[in-house]
Length: 148
Image (cartoon, rainbow, N blue to C red; front, side, top):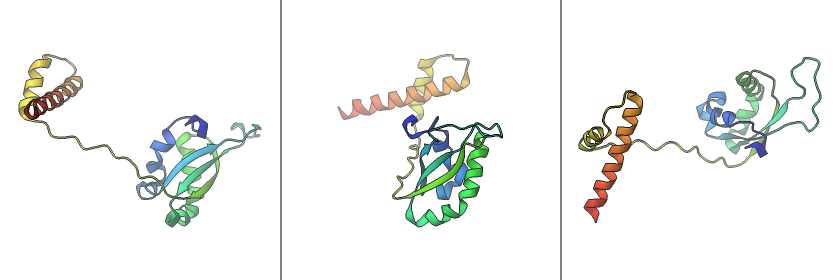
């Protein structure tokens, strides 16, 4: 990420919030090109702004081209300073976002068994997470015992 000019993953993970879910499916921030030589502007904002490079599916390049001034403002508003001054569009295939797998349903008997083994834990969130983890492990162990 640092090699591509990103100080953090926030612009990548927050891209759907910046551009909208529909266009986020067909575009991705690729890198941020910072100016080689920093010059300090009179406005005290830290000098020249960077260039954000986007990979965009060909069919949506024109839509995003028309939104560039708005996108620059949204990115800069997200960070609270004028970090992006220009956006360059590179057309090409954009890999689809990976969505988290849905939780599998756990056997109530395994949940009860895990709950008994865990005992008393004051923090409810921690207790629930441990019960789900234990029930998942017990379910996998129970499945392996049946197949063996």
